[in-house]
Image 1 (cartoon, rainbow, N blue to C red):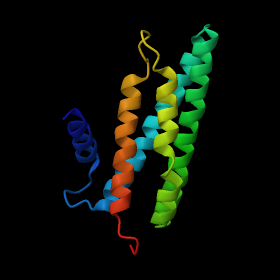
Image 2 (tube, one colour; image 1 turned 120 degrees about the horizontal axis):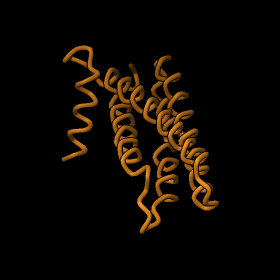
Image 3 (spheres, one colour; image 1 turned 180 degrees about the horizontal axis):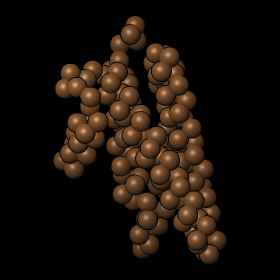
Image 4 (tube, rainbow, N blue to C red; image 1 turned 30 degrees about the vertical axis):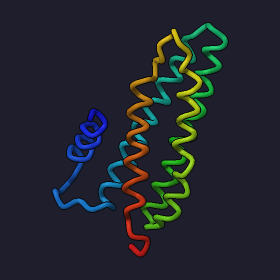
Length: 141
């Protein structure tokens, strides 16, 4: 249920009108995903800069790269979206879930808590929101 609340709040806090369609919802999801990916990228950069453990630093650098790709892919998708090239948008965003999951896997090493757990969880939900709403846009729009 936590995921439903997050998604519901994210959409409702950013809707310009109650009649927002799938195009509008997709715009909201992409915008929030880009902001989240950018903030997480910056946070990971700080973590990498401030750690002295070589294996942790390597994991952070891999995550930094992954979030750079996530951000870049969403920006490419946004460009397609703005041109109403929804198929191109979906293609640009297709590999984002796998790329983001790569970061998650690298930092999931118990007993050490993952410092990105909450950020990764939010990013997963934003990715799902963007992909699901994007797939609902009629391709002849």
